[in-house]
Length: 253
Image 1 (cartoon, rainbow, N blue to C red):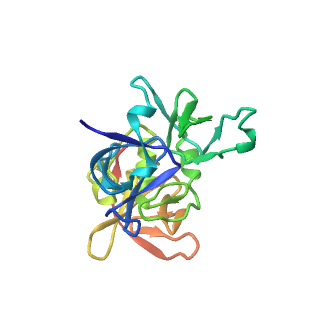
Image 2: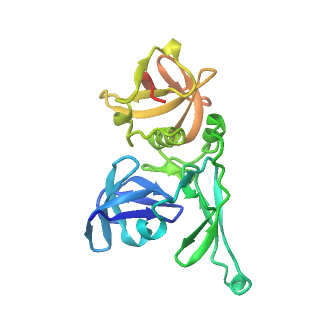
């Protein structure tokens, strides 16, 4: 029998090995689910259902998906930061159990209320309209975090993956996998929303960003930022240094 789990905290790291000291390779956001492969003590070996990415998460951070979401439950992708506030009664108002701040790209309850560990939270999700610029601007200045996919920390391919997911298109986790998606576009024919891929000195695809109008690109490098894009690559807007060598523009969305 397949065991599915759901993330019911703001986000949880996905580790390469079953240890808190192990490299963080990705993460699950609130409402995202995974399939359990095996268990090693407190650690679950899981596969993320949105991109089939494997890793390890402590069991305590995940809940049984079948207990939380009924079969007919519909989840909403939120396009903006959401504060999930607790539903308080007169009796528990003195024992307030706190809010959850959720990143854009999380999945929230379509009913507006979800019980988490015996406490009820309500959501006000901005899930009706998608505006690509507004969605991306929310991540500006988010610090770079290897394996990050949220406003709490972001890496380059995490940004492009969330951007695609917000438009209903699941894509792989890493830049070298994402370059296999879609089709190649001539630099002069690029459009806002295309993906730009970059290589290191050995020719390996190590970076990806999202093309903007006006010769710009948004990407995660030290932080999520907007820089200049040319046929050669990315030029840092402040230092004017060439930071990344362009390989290809691809239309994926």
